[in-house]
Image (tube, rainbow, N blue to C red; front, side, top):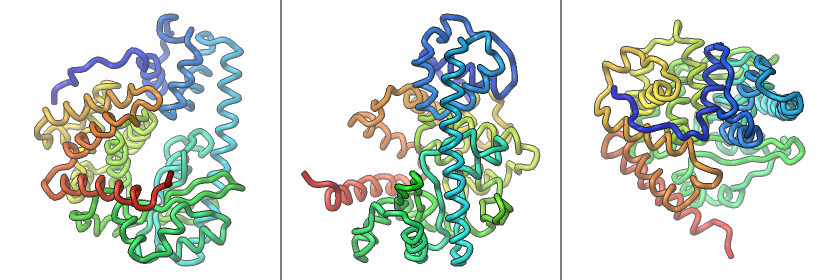
Length: 371
């Protein structure tokens, strides 16, 4: 594969150096021109990319590079995030206990479980929401009842009350959203594991075929086996153009910590069956571009059309460098549709991308806020 022929935005170079130092445990001073004098800007950038854990860890090990005042600000920030993460953990345990009691089939992905797996504690990594995958879409109302009984409200309640509205919504979107005001916790209940699977839904029929139940904080929870988990993380990040470096860091940690047990042939087989191989390759391509991590040999051997991958990676780098709100512009939204079409292999998959966009706009037109 070729190296990406694009320079990294200088605004994120300092953050990238900090992230790299945290993982490789190399010590090296950051010069004044590297961004330490722009501490507040660095904090805002880290918050957007969900990398505060790495930032705090780095400056704890290199206190000479930062003032005591700024280090204390970071410590207070991490304390607040730890409290929020523990609240999410408690909610996840309570929700899963209720699912287990109701014998509802589900899988846990990302969030507190991933934080515990990768970093040893759930308190170091904040998630925007909890992600729960339903195994059987027909169990939607069983899950819905558990959430309502637990004090959650459903944003799509009116749509769920009508069969045709529900069918249209589920076809257009892949999740139902819940929020508990008292706990301050949001949950995405995924009705299907991947978006854009109208014509190609058959590709994911075996996605939940080999779930593993593991002990977790006094209960057992079902999770994906390592190879499927890894493929899911790569595809999730790729669909979002790796716009948050935190997603890429999770992928990097997952692979580095488990590469002795991960079976690359199985990763490629899973990715191939779900048409997400390009997402997995792109994740490694991004790690090579940003952190100079070597791409596994089997990924190199099975990569085709590196020009397409380079185009995808360059667009990901642009997304990584977006200012706040820049990714929501009309041009950025259109560019992302083109990106998703190129990310997806096969005519049916590409049609799925376009259909899902049209359906989402139809749902917004019919059921979105008026006036």
